[in-house]
Image (cartoon, rainbow, N blue to C red; front, side, top):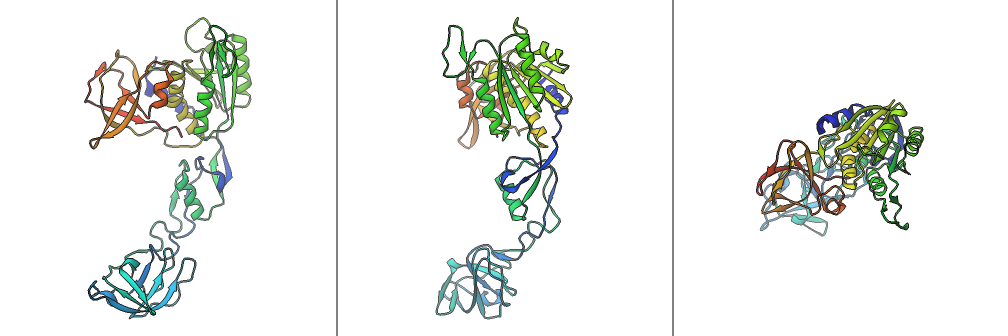
Amino acid sequence: MISFQDALTLVLSHARPLETTSVPLEGCYGHCLAEPVAARMDLPRFDNSAMDGFGVKLADVAGAVEEAPVRLRLAAVVRAGDEAGEELASGTAVKILTGAPVPAGVEAVVMREYCREEDGQVSISRPAKPGENIRRRGEEFREGDLALRTGLRLNPAGVGLLATLGCTEVPVHRKPKVAVITTGSELVAPGGKLRPGQIYDSNSYILAAALRAMGIDDCRLASAEDTPEAIRAEIAGALEWADAVITVGGVSVGDYDFVKEAAQSLDIEAHCWKVAIKPGKPFFFGTRGARLVCGLPGNPVSALLTFYKLVRPALQRLMGAEEVELPALTATLTAPLKKKAGRLEFVRGIASPRDGKLVVTLTTGQDSHMLGGFAQANCLILFPADAESRAAGEEIVIELLDWD
């Protein structure tokens, strides 16, 4: 049995980014960049106004106060999309709208709230500071600057920046093809008739949802009865096309746990089997060439948690992501925790602000077959392997759940 961190390091060492492809801008969300993106132009492209107002010279409004506003002749109006126009002359102002180019000679833009326009003139009731409300050319990026780094997973802001730079095609890593194989003769698809001793299959739907949340759409679900032949046949078929094969159930030491046996018969190199975590100790990881094979325990919470903590980072790495571990926070426990030393325990919790600090409350139903608590949880409490207790009021490390 190995530690969680050793298991994660081992899994990630075998997960290498898939080949590069190109996708259109409108389809790049959720992909990871395969190449750095440099700014194709200065951003902003030109000096422009940060808000609606009036462009002025500083000296012209230096003495302006509410009781004695300065009156300037309105020389022009510049709207977003217009050319900047002529250079501003002393004693005049230009009406300028948000995003419009700033004419030469304008030293500041005074917000319209401090101005009153009437009969071709504008009264300004406050002085201005140099560069006030002006977005300067290139203040975010200069042409050629690194705008987006390799391995960044594109969120809406990243997509927007690519659009701002004029990109239409985006170099990304291909998303993995994933096979999910649930094992168990007792499983029935939801809606089917249950005979005594049977249960509905939840794991197929759990993992399909988790994969969709990651943006992985090429996911095929299959099921196998608890026989060596059935499990071997499903894994063999999946290895023909999938980049990652995930099995659920059949990885422990029971009489009907055949996943390891099937893997061995298919020349899958085993790298680890048991991990010192709770829930989720019976976790299998192997490879055949570049293909990953992950065997998850059958209890729903254990299956989802081992997917989230061990498989999901590997899939993210296949997608080209450089950062796959989530940041940890500290929160104050509202109730005591107890366990036996020896395994890192992931306790499901609900983190919330209280009196200016972050507190975390345990969800009800912490056993590995109880999905109710996980369904409510927004974080995992990291109960260290060597610890046996934590008192209410103590600080403890948590990770906020981030399914996508």
